[in-house]
Length: 184
Image 1 (cartoon, helix red, strand yellow):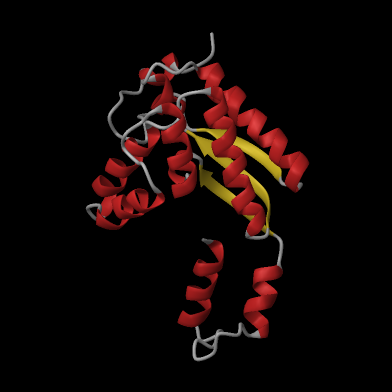
Image 2 (spheres, helix red, strand yellow; image 1 turned 135 degrees about the horizontal axis):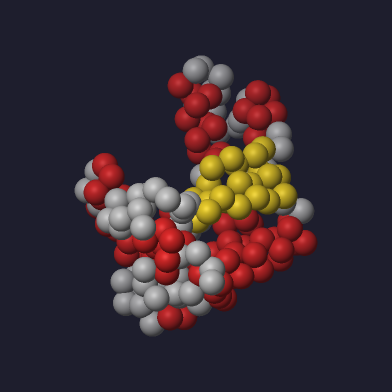
């Protein structure tokens, strides 16, 4: 994920040698630097493997293999509509506190593997409360995943809740629905 983005950046600016499989010193230096991820969306960052693991656990028929998830991503319509179609289908695998824990933990493990030491994670309570999942289930699962990842990987973490008195980022729910996702 991040390594690929860095490589593309360095190739575009002539800082990496693509004629060789060996990274040059600058690319290696940048790859090894500790990094911060300042705007990472949990729901939009589920790995294909995490989606499949949760789908199998929850009996969701949408994705039975990593290849199916990758095909969904590769064949989706371009632009926002294509992204949201895949995003909304992938959301269906997040159902329990354990799911939110695993999704958070798996994502932070990927961050660690990419040299990320600080993450500001955002999530959309409306995407889950609108499906009948309690706000506390979402928040407690994310918090458990965060705590476990902090212990295992040493990643610092902050949370941004995408809600409040504004339209849903998925564009389907009115602003007042934001009030319904708050804990009671």
